[in-house]
Length: 138
Image (cartoon, rainbow, N blue to C red; front, side, top):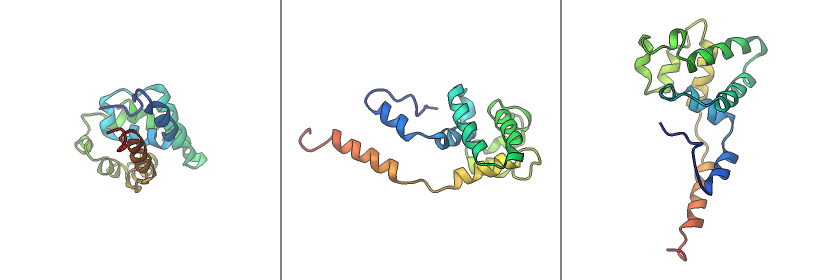
């Protein structure tokens, strides 16, 4: 799995400006991300985003659930039957909505993955591409 923060060259600064805590949360909550150990800075950003979007009384539960997910502890291990949904993050997290320990994190993850992506970032990418590949340069 490629890391979208491993971008090199002139687009590195732009990518860093456009990447927020939400992006790290989405990247790390994708079950396929478990194939590669996340960097501590990415985990901190994702955790900060998640904790900012839950009630005070749920913060400890979400933090523990997130750490268990990232380390494949508890019910998030690869031998657990829900591992069959690793290629579908929405199905994976929906299967945890009725888990009494991890339902709050599951609810957040489902909201993140079901959100419609904004087209602003893609429009910026096309604008950058047009600046590089203009008719004058081709």
